[in-house]
Length: 223
Image 1: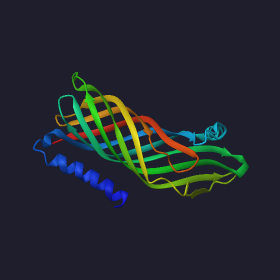
Image 2: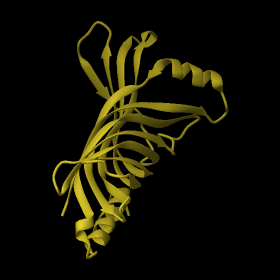
Image 3: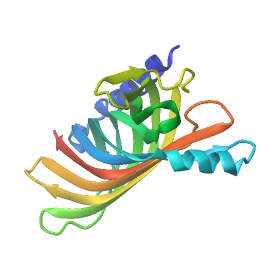
Image 4: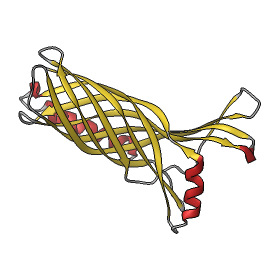
């Protein structure tokens, strides 16, 4: 079974379980999107800190957009579980690499992710309430690309960033924000969220694990 099918079966199974319940009104569905700063944490398997420092001096964080679908089930007055399907674009940049005659290098590693988490919503004050969430995210790599400009030219070149990108990814995440009721059945969430990869981007002595932090919104409606 391919990983695409495996992730699809997970998502369908979750949705089937929720739709089989009599309390369908406890479920909310909607959209989520945001802007996050992405970077990577480096580790050398042989503890060569010199190599780590060299690449840390070159590779810089970048801002990326992400978005997708959200499904949330209310378990009690204060607790809910969430899942969904999200497109993310992780990566980093290298501003200059003069020895190779290149600059403006942008690395893109694109995933489809399935989040699974728990949300705690505090006491409602008017139409607003504070909430916090934590969970795991499982991702499947779609593709990777390196974009760069050659010095003195305006042409933009594209190539594959790495040849042996690990197809699977797992992350831990946490969020803190405000939930506001916009109608009797719809909510909008505004929140800050952080994400840390548990698995390396690819096999090799120099391990890169992505992390990100950003501002997000989610609009959901329960039926």
